[in-house]
Each structure stands twice: as C-alpha cells, then as structure tokens.
Length: 363
Image (cartoon, rainbow, N blue to C red):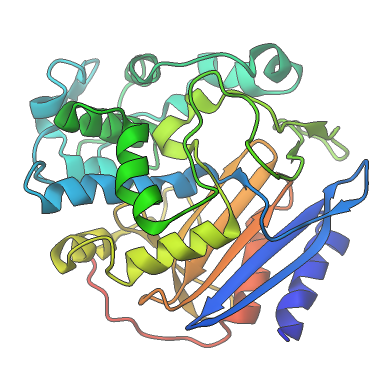
C-alpha cells in the first residue's frame, strides 16, 4: 500500500481543490492504482482507473517517437532543413525554413512563434468566447499561418522557446514523408504496436471523448480569486492536433513511456537523440527541467530526477514521469485545470523520494 502517495492524492483534492485525481504506478512487474475525488461532481461518480482523458502536450512524446522512427528508417534526417519537406511554408517575416531543422522543431529551439500565444487565437479560447468557438475546426496550415504572422522568438538553435507550432510542423513532415495521415501513422506505429486500448487522436470535428471518461472542469483561463468552473469536456481539439490533441488513459501512458524509455520503440541511436536535452532556464517554462525530443527531465522537490512528459488542456492536467529506464513510472491525471504542477510534484516526490544519476547526455 502506497500510503504516502495516497496521502498526496488526497491533498490534491482536499488542499489544492482538484475535482479528482487518478494515478497508476508501475514498478517492474508491480502495478498500483489510486485515486481521490470525483469524475463527476454532479453525480458523485468517483475517479476510476480505466477512464480516458485529454493528455495535452504529453502528445508530443508520441509525435516525436513517430518522427524518430522515420529517422531510424533513414526516411528523415534530424538535421534536414524543414524546407526540404515543407517547401515555401516557413518563409518571410524573419523566417527561413532552410535554416530550421527537424531536430530544432522537436527540442523547441527553432525560434518559431507559438500560435497559441497569438492574441487573435487566444482571445477565442478565454471565458465565454470559448463556448462560441469550442467547435471551431483548424487545419494545420492555418495554425502555421497564425504563428508566422508574428516574428520569431530567436534565431534557429539559439535557445529553448516552447511552441506548439513546432509539433504541428513535425506532424506535417510525417504526412509528407509517408503519404499517410498523422493519425494513421500514430495508430500503426504506436497504438496497435503496443496494444493501447484507450489512446487515439480525435478526428477533426470529433468533440466527445470515446468511452468512459471524467468530466473535464475548466476555469477557461479566467482571472480573479473565485473563477467560475465550466464543463469543458466536449470540444474540437484540432487546434492542438499532434502538439496536444491526444486522448489516453493512465494504463496506456505507463505502457507507452515504459516501452519508449525501455528502448522498445526506438533503436539506441534514436533514443539517445531523444534523451539529449537542452536547457530551459529563463524560458518561462517548467522550472528544474531540461527538454529532449518530445520528452523532458525534471528535478523534483525531493531531489529525484524523473523522465517523461506532461500536458494541460481545458479541464485536464496529465503527466507520466519515472526512471530513465522506464521500469518505474507514475501516470497522473487531474480533471481540473487550476490545481497546477505543484500537485504533480507532491505525488511524484512521494513516489520518487531519492535522487538518482542517470548519466544521460546533454547539449
């Protein structure tokens, strides 16, 4: 019985105000599931281990894995300029696709502006405007155009600047290289390969979550001391697509990250590329982290170093983090978007209380 972990889950609800939280921990062959709070505050339905939820930017680990599998098959070179695959798309207003590489997309050093930060995009996702626009449909090309209307953050390779635009472009390259949709490649290369039963990329226009799922409660980025909470479960997430649009479960996430970090999805050379990290200090991103290719490493308040990815979207925070070899992992989900990252640090520090040196390369 993981008493300290269960206590941390209870604090997430009673102290941080999360509607509910679910956890699945894998340590070798042992598996433990825990939860606190509710999936639906109206009916009193409690969190359950098989529920599906939107995983936000943890989707980037899946996208990067597909790209790196293509690199392993010599169909993409990570240092290819993106102009080779998307000719003429990234050009003008300070951009030149001939100077940005695929690797720089995956580790967020491309300098390309994040379309999610564009005022004309963001204002449609805040407060009551979200209800009017939650079924808006976005093509990847439109998201890129929104981003490129704003100047770059920095020169390519200069520094880390987190941008969903990078992963929209990466998935567009996958489609150009393979001739298949990104969803088809994701399903063939990862979902079916690992037997993931609750993981999928919703189709454009698919607003509901398939199968059992918690209500996703959101403040819709409202400010103030007592923001109104909304049901944000149903929406079209084509605005996030390969950068943050996947649905999954805690069990699927531990299986995926266990296979990924354990070297069962990528050859050693590509896994080494994935785990080679860049500094995120000063970027305004998660403190105590370094970013690789679709995964990051984080030093917890306990002093332990963990690997994986995390993500947030309306009404949903998720993370899957663990040891470098993927044998010991914790997948967590909160069905509310206001408790924030301290909740995850609390739970993860309870499960990973001691520092460890993984000896993984850095740039």
